[in-house]
Image (cartoon, rainbow, N blue to C red; front, side, top):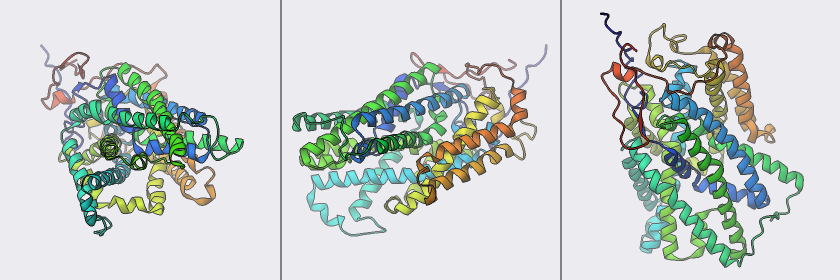
Length: 515
C-alpha cells in the first residue's frame, strides 16, 4: 500500500491564514451589491455627478455618460472577479502569478501608498461632518475651532481621532464583520438621506426642474467632449477597486453571486444614485438660487437642526463605508503580503491607519499641487497594473493558475521566475507607466490627460503579450475554466476549512491528500 504524498508546504515568508485561499464563502449577491452601495454612495461620487450638470451637461447626458463609464467598469470587475473567485486569494497573492512571488510586492505597495493617502483624506473629510454635528449640538465649543495645531483646530483633531478610532474598531474585527456592517448600514442609510433631499427640493421647487437643457449653454461639441471625459474619469475612479477586486470576489460562493451583485450595484445603482444627485443639484438652483453640489452644504442650507444631525450622521457612516471598501482592505492585505510571517490582515490594517495620521491628510488634500502630482502620478500606474493582471490571467495562462505554487519560494517553482521577480512584468510596466504618467501630469498633454489610463493599459497589455509569447503558446488556447481551483496549502499547515454555516455558503474546496 503506497503512502499518499504530503501536501506542498507553503513558505512562511509567503503564507499566513489571511493570505491563504478563502476557507469559506459567505459574500452572496446582496453582500456584493452592498459593497458597491458603500463605495458609490460617497460624497465624492455625488459631487462628481452633480459637477457635470453644473458644468453644463444636460441631465440626460450626465446619466448616459456615467452609465457608459460604469458599464465599462462592470465588465472589468466581472473579469477580475472571475480570477478572484476561482483562486480564492487576495490581490497581492494573485499578482504573484504575473509579477513573481516577491515581485508582487511592487504593484501591491503602489496600490497601498495610494490607499493610505486616500484613507487619511476620507477620514479627515468625515471628521469635518463630525465637527458640523458637534457645533450644531453644542455651539459653545466653537471656541475650540479657531486655533491651529499642525493645521487642525483642537476640535478638528478630536473629531479626526474619533473617526480614526471608530474605523480602527471596525477594521480590527475582520472581513466577515465588515461584510455585516456594510450589508445593513453603510450602503442603505445614504440612499434614505439623498432620496429625502431630492423629494424635499423637488417639492420645494414646485417641480420646476429641467433635465434636458444645459444650465450654462454649453455648445454641442463641448458637450460631447465633456461626456467623453466623464466616461473616462468614471472608469479611472474605479480602477483602484478593479485592481484589488479579488479581495472581495474570493469570498463569493459562485460566479453568479459576484456577477449579479456587480450588475445591480454598478450600472443600476450607480446610475440611479447619479440621477438623484443631479435632481438634488437642480433643485438647489430653484430653491436657493445657486447650484450646490456638496450634499453636506445642501443640508446646512436647509438650516434645520434635525436635518443637520441626521444628514451629518448619514455622511459620516457613508464615508466610513467607502473608506473600508476602497482604502482599507487592499493595503491591509498589501502590507500583510510584505511579511506574512509577522503581519496578518489586522496588523496590516493598523499600519494603514497609523500611516494615515502621519501623512497629515488635511495638508495633502489642501494642496492642489500635491494632489495632482502625487496621487495623479500613482493613479496613472493603475491602468498598466490592471492590464498586466488581466492579460496574464486571460491571454497568457488561460485561467490556469497553480494556487499552491503562489505560496512556494522554491527556485524551481512556477512563479519564482528570476529570484522571485518576473522581468516580463517589469518590462511591460515601466514604459507604460512612464507614458501614462507623462500624459496625466505634463501640461502640454492636458487635452488627453483624462484618458491617460487608456494609453497605459493598452501599452502595458500589448508589451506583456509580446514578451510572454512562449508562455502563452505553452498554455494552449482552450476555454477559460469556471471551477474553483483546488488548493492544499491549508491542509499542509494543519488547517481544515470550516464547515458551511447557513444556506448558500460553501467551503473552499481542498482535495483530500493524494488526490
